[in-house]
Amino acid sequence: MNRFYSIVIALTIVGISLSFVTFGPATEKGLRIGEKVTNEKCVPNAGKYAFVNFWAAYNAESREENVRFSEVIKRFEACSNNKGESIKSVSISMDAYESIFEEIVKKDRLSFSDVYREAGGFDSQLAKDFKLGNQFGNFLIDAQGRLVAKDITPDEFERMLNE
Image (tube, rainbow, N blue to C red; front, side, top):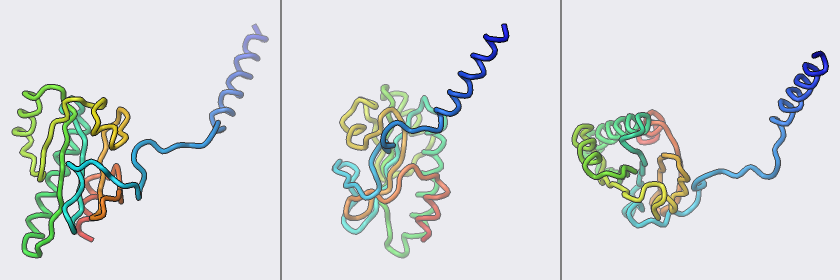
C-alpha cells in the first residue's frame, strides 16, 4: 500500500512539473493585431473604424456582451453626431435558425450599423476569415483595414471610443 501512495505522489509531482513546460512555440489563435482584415462585409468605410462582434442566442455571455456593445455604440453615436464622427458596427450572429436570430434582434433592440446571421456558423468562410475556431470574439479594425484590438470588453470599447 505504501508503494502505491509513493507512485501516486511521484506521478503527481511529475504532472505538476510538466504543466509548467511548453512543448513548442505558443501560437495565438485568431487574427493578430496589425493583421489585415479581408472580409468586405466587415472592412470600415474610408476614414472610419469598424467594430465587429460575433455572438449567438444560445450563448448567454456572448449575447449579453452584444447588448452591452450595442448600448455603447448607441451612446457614442448620440454624442458624436454633432461632431460628424461615426464607427461602422457589425453584429454577427452565429445562430443556425433565422427565426431565433430575428426574435433576439427584436427583443435586444440592437443598434449596430449592420446585424447579420452567419448561417454556416463556425464552419463558414466568415469564421475562417476571422480565424474564430469555435470561439466568439470581437474585433476593432482601423481605416486601413488592419486589426487594432480584439476580444475587448464593452467597458474597454467605450474607453477607446471616448479617446
